[in-house]
Length: 165
Image (tube, rainbow, N blue to C red; front, side, top):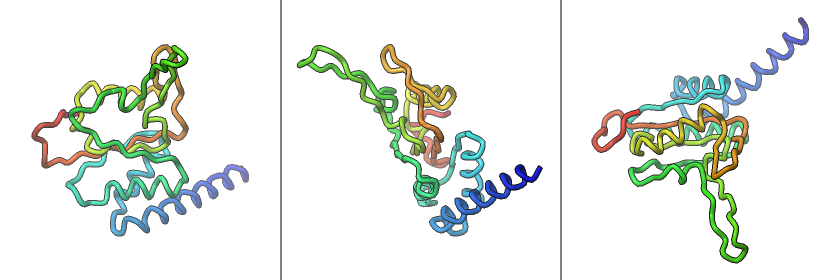
């Protein structure tokens, strides 16, 4: 029982340290910080909805820095392709073979900025990676790093020309 109490205390201290670090970048955004921590602690993913200028990108960067995780921001646009997220095989003429180029999803924390601006095929590729925690490129399947957390944003006001989730 003493070991459990000690483990809980250590986890509590770690969460408070992360909350404090992220809170330095996000003054007055306690709900957002709590949502990010909930996603991190439950191995879930978070959809952040808000108009531009609410420090959504800063929040995600601060979380990644607080836990010393690899971070990648992906701007979702209508011309994005699934391979732009997952990666692809590239032909090398000199050796007559293919090499795998992993995409930006092979990072710990992903900011999927304006996720509703990408076509459904791209959203589907992202959702598959989120669910399976792995990506298949060609004939090979690659595990995603741990932790793997997708924090997606969308603007609830500008919905014209978007692809609803």
